[in-house]
Image (cartoon, rainbow over all chains, first blue to last red; front, side, top):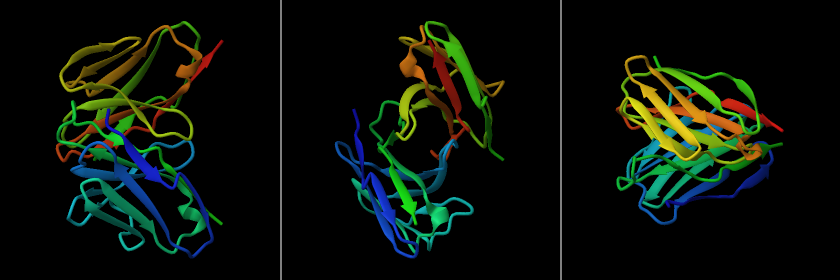
Length: 117
Length: 109
């Protein structure tokens, strides 16, 4: 099956620093990648959608200058949380879709737990 | 607007059957998905419905009624490992997924 990896799985940083999270599709080319944020005991909230080679589309309320998304290739997307603050602490999950999928479903990465001190 | 509702929590006994309901109102419909998510892990795909009716996959079945904006996930022969959150998600015409709040299922011995 399709595999999506994320790195790092866990990161702790100081307030004001920037953190980069990588999302890779390992065995397929991802035409579209999604970035979600999930707070404890809540569902996934879509932050942005990115297509390879074009600018990401951000959901309402998500600051594009704070959450920088780069989708440089069909297998890699990165999310950079700039000037992180404690309220940015959350579980960040990426997913990817492929035009060759059975249901065109999303394949999720294992997630990145970000803690901002 | 877009709205998906699920019960927040459910409890069932090992070996029993449980039905998790999902109602939705979304701008466009291009399929409904059910995912299972264990705490601290990413969601894993369970089932997909795009036409009305029942889809069965082993111990899991999912039903869809598009006219009623309603789906359910049926879990049979519950096992302790089925304790998890179950997410209902609707894909709209823009290919984006809208996730429901999730239902936390606790399976008791």
